[in-house]
Amino acid sequence: MEKSSRMSLYKKPLLALALAAATAGCAVVPEDMRRETLNAGDVPLVLSSKPTPNNTPLTAKLVCYGERLEDAHKGHIALAVGNIRDYTGKQNDLEGFLVTQGGALMAYTALGHLVPGVALYERFDTQIADAELAYLSNRQLGDGRLHETTDAQTGQPTEVPWKPYYGGSILQSDFYIVGGITELNFNIQSGGGELNVNNVGGKGRIYTMNVGVDLRIVGTQTLKVYDTVSIQKQISGYEVGLDIFRFFDNDLWDVNAGAKNQEPLQLAVRMAIESAILDLVPSVTGVTPQDCKPAVPLVDDDAYEAIGGKAVTTRASVALESDPA
Image (cartoon, rainbow, N blue to C red; front, top):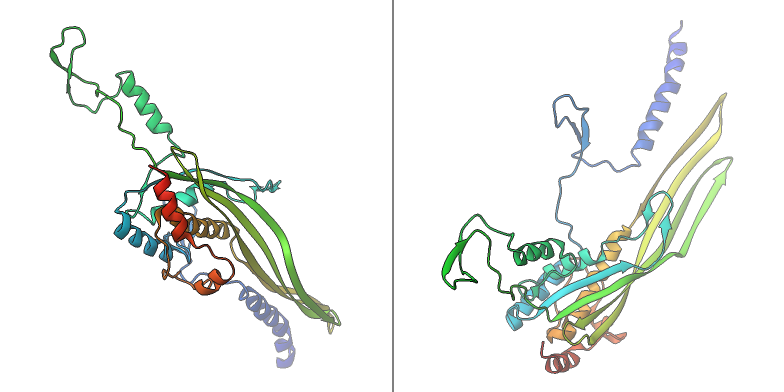
């Protein structure tokens, strides 16, 4: 066989291999991706990044605001979170609910960044505490030690293995945050283009959707609603692609390559809840997060006030005076 003939046999496989490698390059692969066997006899698993704190661009602003609250109130204002449900009604037959059902958990995490500037109390899931208080009242709960108490019949001091309980161990909250995820609007704006010449071409598309939350802050003892807020967050994404479907000499080539990316939906929900908390908490504390900046600039504070941002300081002072909590 001649040299030129042998070369022609290798050209097409090599070209196909190069094209496959180029197509694979469209996907972003983590640099630290590796295969590890965690237990003897197990199939190796693909491992990439390590667990990291689930911070958002607003985390730094929440921490800064918490430091200001600590200077002003020393944690004397107690907050809690009620149920923050998904009210969008949007479901997927294959994957269940489209929007996270953990709105209250996200709100608690956001308020946790304000501690010790505020006191944070559990009200969302009190199952364990309720069970142990029931054990206490039935004289069933102990800690492995003997406790001194007074015998009800003789009036004499005695030691018992159960913990005596005289009530009042649960501290009251002053305000709580409640509400829900109320909007999920698909494709509020989209656009793009596509061009094909002789079955060779490319396409590109951009699209935007949004999610919204409605929250309120309520006085625990009076049930007075001190402030309400509605926050929406737009979510953008893009898609680009390249398609080839045509004959080259006697070979039919069918090649598809592209990339698609979208801002995470649940991250947008978390940021909307965090933004709502930054609006609600100043209404009952009298301390604003002014000059506290997010890690990634999102909106200019002056521009926010110009389009109707809340002047919370005056209303907050009235709220604190009117609610003895």
